[in-house]
Amino acid sequence: QVQLVESGGGLVQPGGSLRLSCAASGNIFRVYSMGWYRQAPGKQRELVASITRGGNTNYANSVEGRFTISRDGAENTVYLQMNSLNPEDTAVYSCNAAVRASDAPFATNYWGQGTQVTVSS
Image 1 (cartoon, rainbow, N blue to C red):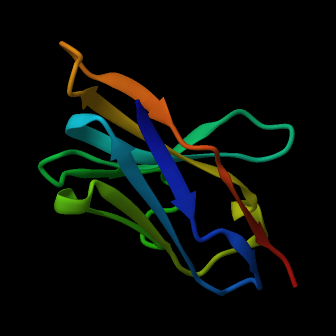
Image 2 (cartoon, helix red, strand yellow):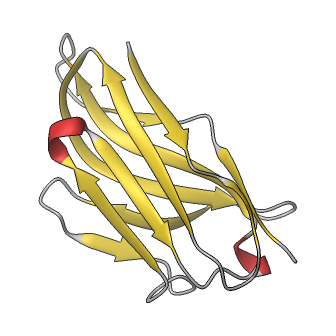
């Protein structure tokens, strides 16, 4: 069994910063790509940022230059540093990872439970 556990969401004022964390745990053979998605009320879920096992990153245009994704391979953890937050960043942020379990022949997509980020004065 593989689990993704997120932390770090909350309420922040416009212009502020938050750091999200997501740790993969369980019966893991290898973690491949990891990423963050978000879904605002009434909108479709969108990719915020992703990072490959080799460290290549990809960002949504709306967060480029403000958000930074990173990972700790030894700890199977991915981080999202969010700076210059604005109300349009308000959403539920969910962690995603492609993980091969120890007893599996291939990787499977896993999701965290989601963490609320609210940007408001």
